Picture 1 (spheres, rainbow, N blue to C red):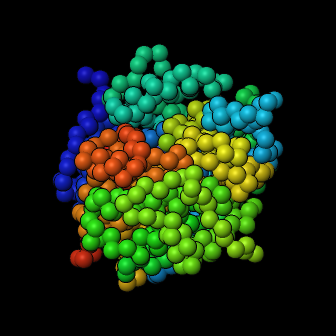
Picture 2 (picture 1 turned 60 degrees about the vertical axis):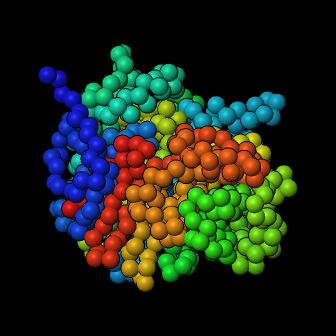
Picture 3 (picture 1 turned 30 degrees about the horizontal axis):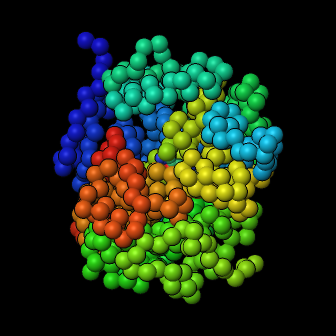
Length: 562
Ligand code: DON
């Protein structure tokens, strides 16, 4: 019999140690754990993190091992050729946020995706070599490494093994690889591990020998194993073959940066999240501060009043996203003004209960001047350290371009810039000056990893992929837990909705209750079905100190702990 993956769904099973067999593994949607927990988009990546905890590592060891393993077993979004954000809570009380978002290459400029007529050519910002920003993931890992406990060679080994020896792919992965085969063929200059003659099917082995070698160079030479030497040369050679812009200088100069966390109070919780260039760091506090002015828990989960209020709050916040938000290293974003009580009160004057707002009428506010593919994972350890990371290539399999000889996919994050004012990107987001392309600038993101504390103690670790739906999904997950008292599993799995100002529509998941859709339509909303929204991962610390761990039912997401 050929090797195959036994993929079973264990709902509600309590955690037991299961074999590290990359050909026979289980997707586990929930776990209860005393000593440590990991939840990510793929069971083998969650297992890699769990292994670090079991070896005496902490939440940071587990997070780095999970990130690296995701780059192998979940190539659609896990990555070393992309970037992301990390929120870190240390048991000694420190909260930190790490920005390893990609940057525009130094040769980039604001008009680089405009054709001769001045029209935006989105195929170039979304596919192939020119779509790639300078990757940040490996720099992020090495910034975080001083907070880990285990030797790096131990942390990276599961990823090397999975790349070198292969693993069985899931049904979802097989489908995605088959769907994207034409893009892999179109946007690569060398054969890649992701294309084979026959159709992929569940249980097929994915071998990534070039990637294993790249990971070994990172193991042996640290950050320089990626940003300098052979890997850097392979990236630049790939860029030359495909007319991309990333140079040796871009790579050498790349730095991940610690930024001051966004932190605000919400009903007894301290919510900690990523600041700009995450738009979530501005929108989440705006939305939650607006929400706080209403008795929303009395309205109830998915009540007409709650749905309408939250939709309008999302509209108000996203209208400001388009105008004001961009990389704060390049553009003076009025963050304090936008999240001030005075401004929140002024914005809420535009809200009329029971009646749909209108995005033509509701525009970005006036503030005083001031000087789909992504993945999220969480880890927590027995001491109460915790990590929330959202990391991305942007679209599924990013630019579809694999660095020849190095075996990893490059992102298509350049599309997160505003390539032309008012032209929607792949998530329908529009922007302007604040998020225009400039050399070395970071593109605005929606990624919103969150850690919430209760009386200074770890309470909630969460986040999700989903482009512009990320911030609204995180907002709804937090409200589901804090205001609507839903169980952690329901907080993640109950259908979500999304409004982002433009287009002036409420997107709902396909299992959103029909009577709720009709109630929204009666109030004047255009409701549009959107398949699935997000893949939210959640760890909740319970009163007895144990962790309840939830992997979103929308994908292969899997919880682990012990
Ligand atoms: O940073 C961002 O906002 C986007 N690049 C995220 C993309 C994403 O979530 C796609 N996943 N479904």
